[in-house]
Length: 126
Image 1 (cartoon, helix red, strand yellow):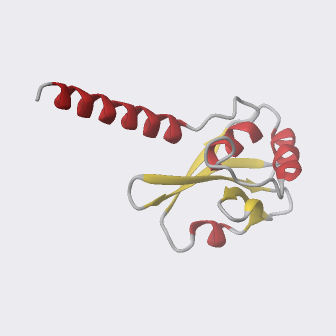
Image 2: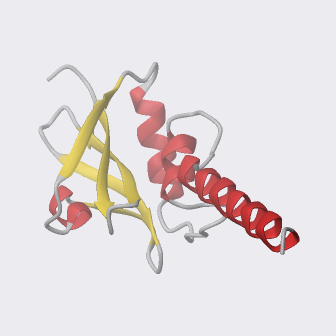
Image 3: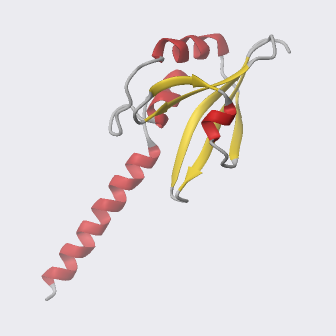
């Protein structure tokens, strides 16, 4: 192996939620997953610990500087989880060097807003 291989890993929870992390394969053959979870914060764990028996999806990441991704993931170890500002998606995006956003959180917010609008429109027609 010539360096570090990085993959995004994900598992589905209750069909509608996805938990994501970073699977990093080191030159010596060691593979670890960095993930951010409620009650644990950012942790380094095995793939088996990450997926907890669920089907896992791995997507290769072509990072410009995989060593920088590894350094950011290591730096974040122990950082507390926060659903709104530092969840698993925020962490993975930040570690990859992009804006720490959560598409699932944005989609949930948009869905909630749409539901409130539909309810308001329905109530106003009564």
